Image 1: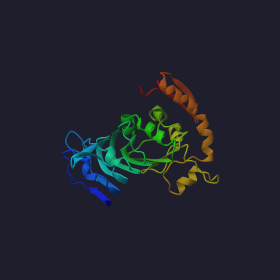
Image 2: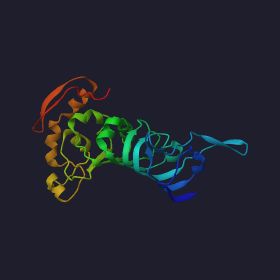
Image 3: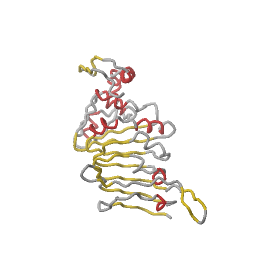
Image 4: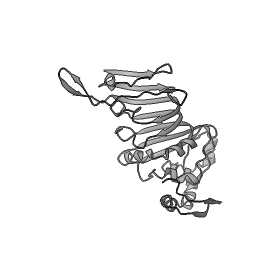
Length: 272
């Protein structure tokens, strides 16, 4: 059965677990889920039963994966993205995932079964809080997928500004720029994104090859995305990222001048 679109609107209530059998062998262009929330006051997040098969006409039948191309989870509050929500049987064939709102946490292995996923866009209300809550271990899974195919990750920040400070570099150590993973950083509030070492590290696959275009010229055009320009190549080398990422697994201290400013942090190891 082919369906163009399924909408779970704000009035939808998810008080009970949903049996994945209702989605068995469906082909769906897009699924939209709105206003999911998970707080002490109110919780309304769909949970899908863990079911591999079903009993039919005297025999056990295996559940067929649902073929969903795109999933958009909009206007969420305090959401924890995990396997209970992103059920493998239902969403395992998704190619594009969009999450918008207050995202609190992503489980490390939640994207592992998603073999077709090649685009992830997250518009996060408080990106700084999310980064420090999740430690970005899920980036390791995305990087693994990007070893054999192109993968696009878009990180948009919402109301609370995040400047990608260098002190947070270790929180992104799971990103491997040697893969085919391209990260685009966007700031909706202010077109200017400060070129910190962390921002350069995450943006290094987004290279603007037009040598006549400068970063200031890019901003004048009204673009808010992070790109690397020829003028950034020297800055990226000065960051000495290889050495700094090695320090993420030690209790070392580093002092150095980076991009013309004095940088100091006690214990670059942020993650244990």
